[in-house]
Image (cartoon, rainbow, N blue to C red):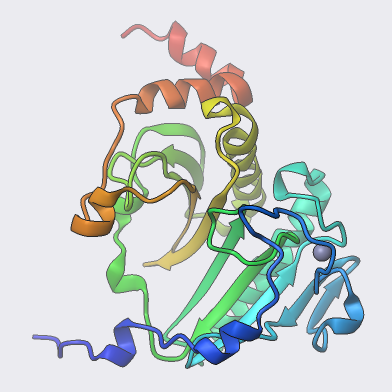
Length: 274
Ligand SMILES: [Zn+2]
């Protein structure tokens, strides 16, 4: 039997004194602020990687013990958003992010490496300026907390080595979109699917009620997953009892998504005999 995990392998120590120094521009009452540390390049720590206005820097506020946090600043435009990028900018942002994530994984320095994004007042982020985070964790491995089942459900779109689905066993509840990448050379298709999902959430879904999302990347048994989650206030049933809730309209959401972004595949499905 495996040794039981100790606290240092399953939870992160949050440094409150560092957190207090962190600048915040994302507030429910004040969504945009003018003193953004990512707009003022003179405030940035030494740049690790640079591709035009896409920058990789160390996070100035490492709030977790045993972590190496990096920030990828996606653009010089504070009020831009991933859903608005041209395809070439989208690919350049993800190329730097995915290369860095892979380098951190390959370094052997970490038990696991987190790659995530926060957007909007309910996302848990503190800065509005579009950015992603890569966090190497020295002791904590997230993989025992997740399973392949977390990324399965009705398929919205697929091609060899890459697909998008909607969770029928969501981790928290409601709508969780998952991109699965099994053939690495299909990474640009993965980027397109992530951008379409963010567009669907922010513009087309639930009458524009969603203003916040996260995405999270995982590497599990050689498969890369990206889970894109619209963020609303977390339900009490999950907070108190860890019971996820799945909606009874998954197929309708799949069809709505297909009709907007993949009209050919939706038509094909309709034409097939049931
Ligand atoms: Zn900014």
